[in-house]
Image (cartoon, rainbow, N blue to C red; front, side, top):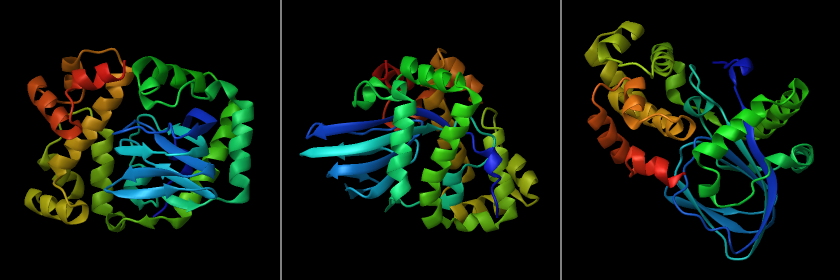
Length: 285
């Protein structure tokens, strides 16, 4: 299975170098963009997926979008950071195709790429390290606009650097079993392309050319969840992004994502994120 490299819509939101001294401690962070770190000094800890990862020099670390995580730091700690936004996609993304490692060995050129990006884009450095200061509507939209307004040569240089850094993780990644199933590939592509609509099990069964009961069993055996649970998860992820990028009432966001009942959308959002849509948005203002 090959994914066309042209399908990657990778946008740099922030890049910079940060030095901390026991003051990099943030809890329950979750953002609509991927983070890549290159540690140069000291040590810190990343709490994610029920485990603890030591952040140490000579290593690269990648945190996918929407993954809840926390940071812990007790002393000097220096690191380059890169925030990458993939935008709205109609195709299945890399993180759905592959099981990525969180940590890989950094190659000598990686720190150089970070340094060059920092030198060429000093405006992309975060003014504060607190995620709450940049995970909000105003700054997020501004960062996306800033990237979109860059010249073509700047985007080309950034794209090549981002792809190089991500390739370190892809080299160590493993394909998920479902990628061998053409039926499941078609089903996920259909879900991603129609996430703004109401999607029925019968529609997915037609896409896969199988019966509805068999579709549900096959989907659960591949993903460990039902098609409806998967669809709702993707809708809530899209809602999280819309809440910080669009100035729309929660009710309208619900309708734009194919929910006919705004109350159900609010309950589902809170069940998934621990916050109501209003609380989620207010926390980031």
